[in-house]
Length: 250
Image (cartoon, rainbow, N blue to C red; front, side, top):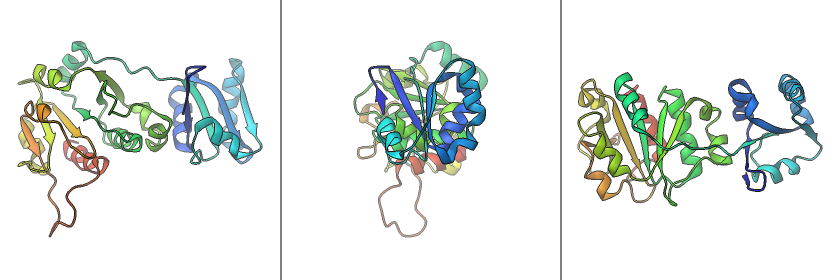
């Protein structure tokens, strides 16, 4: 939940807040928790007190729900300044190519929980770069995505772009552009062979429509995760598919 008046974002969930404490407690502007969580946040409270930032024990968990807009706060809410998502630059992509870093591009993944789950998988598999378009259909960093990421937000770089096709066009011949599609011909197990030593841009599509036609046209390969045995449903959830593909990349 975003506080537009103070330009703050609520981070809730025990794992998310504890990782925020570990990796960037200075970003916390205010902290709230129920009494039962007090022993687990004593160190953070001391740090906040040292820089005159407030922390509060709340009597009623409903207060936390009001702060973050979710019943899934797990007894703690930290307010941070609204994260700034920087635009992707040629310096960034040049570094990817030079260092052999892979990247994930989300083509209008609209569900915040899916974004959070993708971030969690990316952090687990050591994939540091995620790109999202400046599009109303694309979910951005929210309270829900932060919570579902379970601390993964502290380990990935999220960039924004105006045009996915333009990015893919610029990366032609420099990175392997790997799209996901129901009519894909490549097997995920062959990703390393397909990449042939080059870094990969993995493009994941919208939950209902998949990747757009213009994005498809700018992919080098289209990959499909095959079912085991007789297919009962058409596809996996985008976050589940992301985990499988990231595993193969890693």
